[in-house]
Image 1 (tube, rainbow, N blue to C red):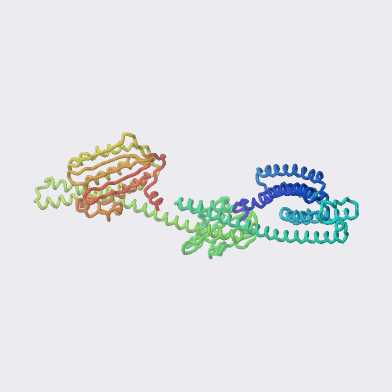
Image 2: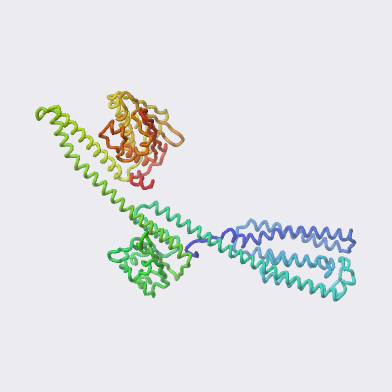
Length: 637
């Protein structure tokens, strides 16, 4: 996407501009070793077996020089392989040209010493030209082919006219035919024709291959660009999802788009349906003076974008659609692009991009910006919903706390009056009156208990987020809770068994949270365990976890009720029968506190055999700010 989306040279590009030609050098060097072996072998076998008169000393001397040069080529090739890839391929190009020059001299000498125009190596020149079509550019290849044709023609004519000695004995063709001008001219015509036809075909084929490779490279770049865009969209989605506040989320969207697209600035405006004005919600990259230049009229400046279509301004200083052209010129803004923020049902605002230079946007960029704006619009709507829900939760918490305080005073007064009447300070009571008074007192105790539970929960949820966790000794917390409830358990004839390990186990949290967890679980165990039962608390460690078990021999929980016991205000039928005044808020509260501490809670229960709660916590955890219960719920969602 040019400047907006950074691009890199892909693996295929590297192979073509550097690895491609360089890797061809390797098999060219290897092929030269093979041809040298063939020439040396042919020299010995030709003289000894076929009785040709090849000047072996001269041919082998030429081969020895080429062997030395090819060894140097081999060494230089591996030296080039170790270099860092560079877009400048002149080194490989010079290396290629130098090898062609050496081969041209080598084959020219062999051509002369093995019979000239009648040499069996004549068509090796043809092979060499085809190789040049693979390794050289079109112009260089044609120049090299012409050089080969000129070399062959010159040597043949010099030998024909006697200006250059002709090695008749090195060829299979008879001496008379070799000296025949017609034979020489026809062979030259045939060879040169085949030479140029071959090189034309090779160049045509490789031009098409290169075109296909370039097309593939462009497709690869587009694919890489698309992958980058998807990655950026995914990252933006993650960032905006983890940022719950409304305005922090807007700022994140603007900064992300400015960075991704390489822009001068970005503004995000939301439409006020009452005034039809676009209110600035977030901006980045622009000066305060420009941001505060004045209200933006939706009908004048961004009508097209609000209609659901992007609007592009090439020159902000002259375009009539720009409401403040002088301010834009002063700010250094040249081009603008306005995009609609499409919510789930309608346009909720606009996203405007600013550039400091004249810039157009291609279709790929427009599609990408459209995806960004759509994702941003959905994120904005989600943030609005979150803020609304948060305000509703805060209002509900305030209302519950206020009502709890308001009810607490009258209830305490009524309870006091009932106590006075039950103690006989206002006269004697009949048996029926006393029973009614006691029932009223129990009901008031139940209401007070519910009020206290609600107050505890909402106070815990609304506490300040800067509460610091400290290392807690779980053994100490358990022992303290057992001591607190020992008397209550003994009154019902219950025994409390505690199994603690020798090692000290700690977790990060607050004493208040651990007290609430243990107090609620032990209270429930005492309440729902018949007289003479047993309550067991066990502590153990497994890998990086601390496991706390609270078990009783109480009434148990039916299998179908187990998933519901952590729902607020839910109580099993057995629990209602055993304690009609319970509130069903303890276990949901325990689960929230446990999850806030980074733990989990599960339950096992057999009908009429008791219940076991299993709590797991991280054994060690870095101290950090404790999240509120609302934040914990949001993270789970």
